[in-house]
Image (cartoon, rainbow, N blue to C red; front, side, top):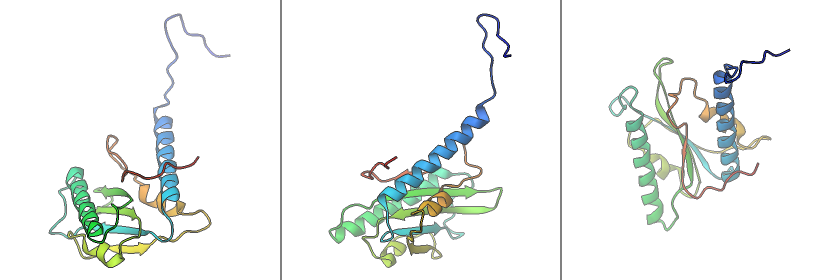
Amino acid sequence: MDEVPPEGRTIKKDNNKAQKNLNDKNARKYVERLINENFSDRDIWMTLTYDDEHLPPDGDVDAAIKNVQKYIRRINYQRKKRGLPNAKYVYVTAYNPDAEIRWHHHIVMDGALDMETVESCWKQSSRNEVRRLQTDENGLSGMANYIVEEKNRVPSEKRWNSSQGLRDPRI
């Protein structure tokens, strides 16, 4: 039988770790659903890296995010020149100094612009991967889980960013 606390006192359970795990799981599910709802195999998945000359300082997530935002502005400029609307995208910035993972960005973007132009707009490195999305029996879930997986994320940091105008995922 459970102990009844004296009046005015509550039993405090340590659910902090369980809640963090649940929040992480729900955030992953949301991004997975968002990507599956808004992107298909006609769209692009890219991994953008940095060379030594352009590498953001250790731990400076703001500098890394500023670089990817400049990149998206360049993409939208190229799209505007071609009479296309602004890009639809979801991006994740990844970095882990403990595992010696360098700064890089995973971006899922609509495929209205050719892959050569998309790759040439990134000025921070010449070694990037740009490829078409490939759906499997689970849609784009495997790729979505891969890009959102962050082992040692700073708790106050946002894990992903997206463009405006994406359709909300159906649950």
